[in-house]
Length: 216
Ligand SMILES: *[C@@H]1O[C@H](CO)[C@@H](O)[C@H](O)[C@H]1NC(C)=O
Ligand SMILES: *[C@@H]1O[C@H](CO)[C@@H](O)[C@H](O)[C@H]1NC(C)=O
Ligand SMILES: *[C@@H]1O[C@H](CO)[C@@H](O)[C@H](O)[C@H]1NC(C)=O
Image 1: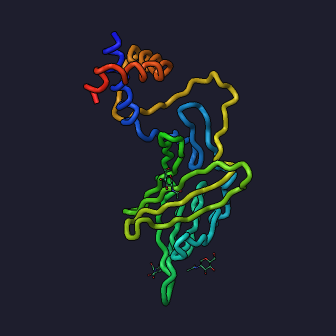
Image 2: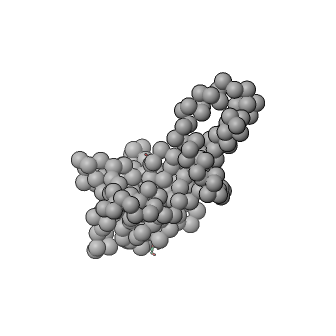
Image 3: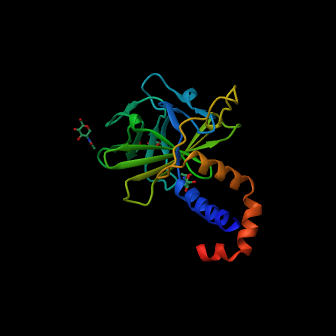
C-alpha cells in the first residue's frame, strides 16, 4: 500500500511540475478570472481617447521609450492601433515599433501565482508582469528588450488594480482549470487531494522507503 501511495506521490509531484503555467481566463481585454475564482480587473486603467495610459516610459537601460495601454488601443508615431509601442531614438527620425497587439493578450499565471499578460506583434513578443500593490495607483517599469536582439520585451505593471478580487460568492464553482498535457480521472483526483492533504506525512514516509529512492 505505502509503495503504491509513494509511487502516486512521486507521479503527482512530476505532474505538478508539468502543470507549469495555467491560463487566467480572459474576460475582457484587460481582465481575467483565475481558476480559484478570483478576478483581476485592470479596466480602471482604460483611456478612451486613443492615447496610451503610459507614454514614453524610458527603459531601465536608458535606451528606448515605451508606451503602453492594457485596455485600449492607441496610436503614436508609426505605431497604429497598438497596445505597446517601442520608440527608438534615431537620427533623423525616431523609429516606432509595434511590440504588442491588444487582441493577442493572454493572461498566464505561473506556479508562484505571478500573472503575466503576453502580447504578440509579428515576431515580437511582450510580457507584462502584474504586481499587486495597494498603495500604488499605476506605475510602469520598462525593462525593455531582453536579451538584446531577442525581440522579447519585458515590463512590470505595479498597481492596486493588479490585485486579485475575491468573488462575492465563494461557493461559485471554480471553472476552466487548464492542466497542460494531463488528463486525470475523478478517482485519481480524489487520491491527489488526499495526497496533498497528507503530503508531509507521506513525504517523510517515502523518504524512508526504498521505493522512493528507486523511483527518483
Ligand atoms: C523619451 O521619453 C522622454 C520623456 O519620458 C522624452 O523626453 C524623450 O524625448 C523621449 N524620446 C523619444 C525618442 O521619444
Ligand atoms: C513612418 O510612417 C511613414 C508614413 O507612413 C513612412 O514614410 C516612414 O517610412 C515610417 N517610418 C518608419 C521608421 O517606419
Ligand atoms: C516577470 O516575472 C517572471 C516570473 O516570475 C520573472 O522571471 C521576470 O523577471 C519578471 N519580469 C519583470 C520585468 O519583472
